Image (tube, rainbow, N blue to C red; front, side, top):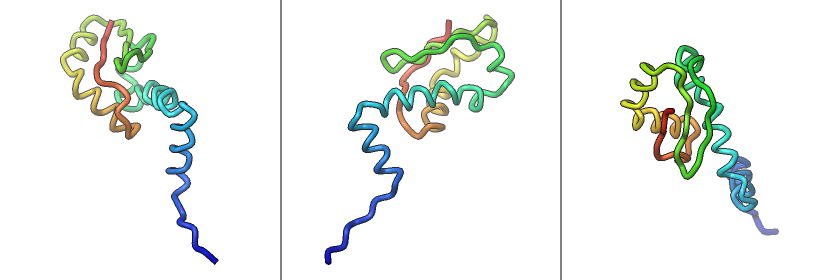
Length: 96
């Protein structure tokens, strides 16, 4: 008898998602839904629509002062969101 090499189930699922072209949409969904957890409820209540296009996260912020503050910390927020889902989904954030 031959021994088969076992792979962790997580790796097999990621590979199947990648083969079916579903890995990127799933990571985008996870990133958008992790916004409240990463940024906190205080910021989340001023957040409107969010979507990702061409590796840029677009977020509607209803407070002009908060929008300005978040714009100055775009790189840090980008890194925190990508780290949360353990994938490089976005490269920039645009607040409007």
